[in-house]
Length: 570
Image 1: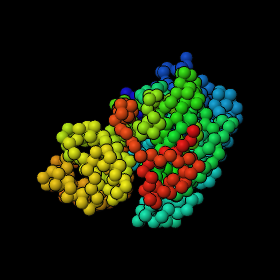
Image 2 (image 1 turned 180 degrees about the vertical axis):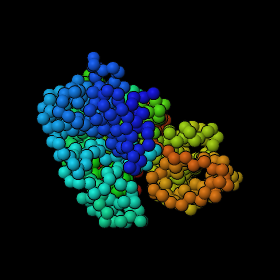
Image 3 (image 1 turned 135 degrees about the vertical axis):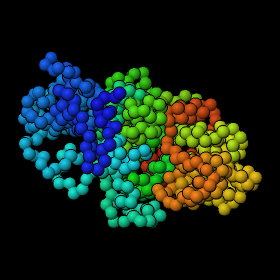
Image 4 (image 1 turned 60 degrees about the horizontal axis):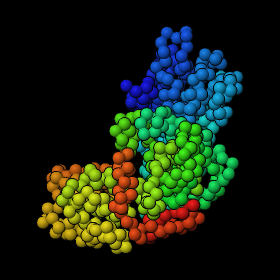
């Protein structure tokens, strides 16, 4: 069994429902669809208590609000409040105004304490973190998002329920120019407002960014800043900030600070991922501007927080960008990509398109000295390919890869590493197709792809189809090309919805599996493969100064070139 908060999060909290658990003589905990609240938490031991608290203060993780209902000291435990603040670094403490000083003297930062008078919050709503779309739960899931830069209690009345980032059926617009027609959904309203953060997510990590009992240690902690407000450093640094559809801007922003258990990574190079490009085109509902993207990053540790070995200073590392809770069943199994509260550096908090950024120390993985930056930076995307091919490909298989961008080309290489007999790849862009052919695949133009697959398999079809494009036309092509009983893996982000011929799925008894990111084991295996010389990405990477980031994104969005961009930050 987990803590009472873990059990609380297991309960359904859909629209109009609130889950409540009584903590004995230690107060209450409430959970709505988006918010976890503690009411009068008195969690430290006390001689007058008949029963021990069911929730140790250090285990009070993922809390958004802590309410103290009275001015009496027995309604806010001065001993456990600092521990709650550490365990839930994004929590706001709402207390009666007369005891604000007592709370801050207990060690809780003043900006995290809101003093109110009786009735002062009537008709006002907590302005909490915006939840992202969890890949398992959909919009408005239980994942902890980043707190916004506004006051925890908004001054205006709410006109609608707070939800996560809008689904793409509620199209979004911000300060940049409107995205091109092809970058939007056909049924989208072009004038619908898009939510924006009021300040770039450039500082320390913030709520949910700490460590749990699995890959990240003992309970979430955070650096002094949060993902919206600038970090607490006195110096400034350069960052490429996403401000809206097709708009990136180089800005001077405050330095991040390494909190307990954190490190600050001095970025050396950071590659542009296809998902970053989707955000640039406004095709991603989870990359909400202003935001510092970037999650394929190589750098060196420039600062360490308390609890981190000082010997790590100067260590060359690759970013492992999934920040998981470490407690759920998926995390305990190493499947951090399925974490119910997982977040991604460069999407949910500041990433590698900045000279420096703060992450948990466990997210900075040492890189072998003999591995060049240009190869090591492919650890994360190769892990995506390993996640698919390790499950999909068996010795002697014929594999058909649709789409020959960087991920498609990595799928080709990974399929051969898993002893595929033949890999056929198709793309409408002949220049991109050449990169997959260089990895050993048979490249065919889109119009000839199905015929090539059938010719290679005596009309039977491919054993495995990997769709790295993700459009309605490629879904159809995959179903045509797969053999009866074959396996289709969908990893492309081209379209959010479309028609699928399910009679073909039924008739062929085909299996369609989605693939999201990677597991702990996939990431470790990817780095091991690269260190062993499994991939030589000759000609893949085009180095671009950070200052030219806007132009690089435009080239990728409009021309599909260069093949993969490597932003230089050192």
